Length: 325
Ligand code: ATP
Ligand code: LTN
Image 1 (tube, rainbow, N blue to C red):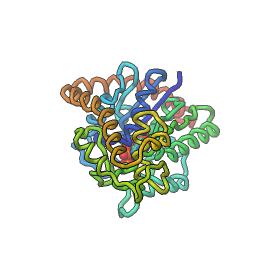
Image 2 (tube, helix red, strand yellow):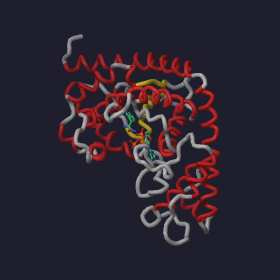
Image 3 (tube, rainbow, N blue to C red):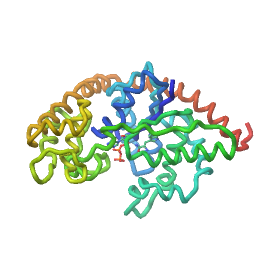
Image 4 (cartoon, protein in one colour):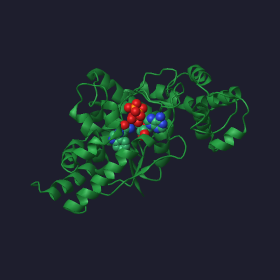
C-alpha cells in the first residue's frame, strides 16, 4: 500500500476547483492507500485572519471533507496544529532550505506582491508544507497544478536532508489529475478559480444551491465566435466549460467538444452535470453540520493516529541532526 498525504487551507468555503483538482482524487485514493488528509490551520496564519473565523472555518473545512466522501474509518483526517511535530520538523527543514530557493516560490511572490508588511511565515510557508508531507513517509501527494513548485521544493529538501544526515525521509511525488487540475474562473477564464479572488460569479462554491450554480455557469464568459473547440489559448472560456463537463463525465474534452455546435446547449449540460455532482455533497454537509460534536471526535481520533507516525519520524530527524534524545 502506498502512503498518500494532502492538505487544504481552512477556507471552509471550497469551490469547484478544489473539488475537481484535489478532493475528488483524495476520495478515490482513500481505499487503496494509507491516506492522511490535513486541514492546515497553521498555514492560514500567514495572512490576516480573525481568530473566531479561523476556528469556525477549520471545523467547516472538516465538515466539507467528510461531505465530499472521505471516510473517517479508512483515512486519517486531522488538523495540522493538533500534531506539534509539524512545526518542530519545519524548523529542522528551515535550516535545510536556503533563502534563495524560497525567494523563487511563485506563490510567495503572488501573495506578497503589493503588501507593505509581509509575514515571515508567508516566506517559510512552503517549508511547513514540506514538513507536513515528510513526517508521514509519503509516496504520493494529490494536488492541483498550482502546488507543483512546492512539491519540487519538498523533494529537494528531502533529498538534501537525506544526503547530509543519512536516509531519513521518503521522497514524495506530486500526483496531478489529467483533467480538473486547473479549473478556471468562469468570469476570468485566464485565471484559476480561487477563494482569494473576489469573483462571486466566477467561482462555483461546493455548497452553492443548484439554481445559483446554474446561473453562474449560464453567465460564464465565452469567447468571440460561436464554434465549440477545445483550445485553451484561443478559447479559454469555452475550453474551461468543456473541461468541466469532461471532468464530470469522464469523456475527453475534445470528444465532448465534437458533440456541440452552440454555446447554449453546452452550458446547460455543464450546469446539469455540476449540479448532479455537487448535490449529494450539499446534503451530507447539512447532516454533518447538525452534529459538530461528532466531527470534533473524528478530528481528535485522526490527530492521535497522525501523532504516532509523526512523532517517530520527527525523533529520527532530530537525532540525525544531532539533537539530544
Ligand atoms: P488560493 O485562493 O489561496 O489560491 P485555493 O482556492 O487554491 O487557494 P487551496 O486550499 O490552496 O485553495 O487548495 C486546495 C487544493 O485545491 C490544492 O490541492 C489545490 O491545488 C487545489 N486547487 C485550488 N484551486 C484549484 C483550481 N482552480 N483548479 C484545480 N485545483 C485547484
Ligand atoms: N499549500 C497547499 C496546502 C498544503 C498542502 C500541504 C498540500 C499545506 N500543506 C501538504 C499538500 C500537502 C495549498 O495552498 N493548497
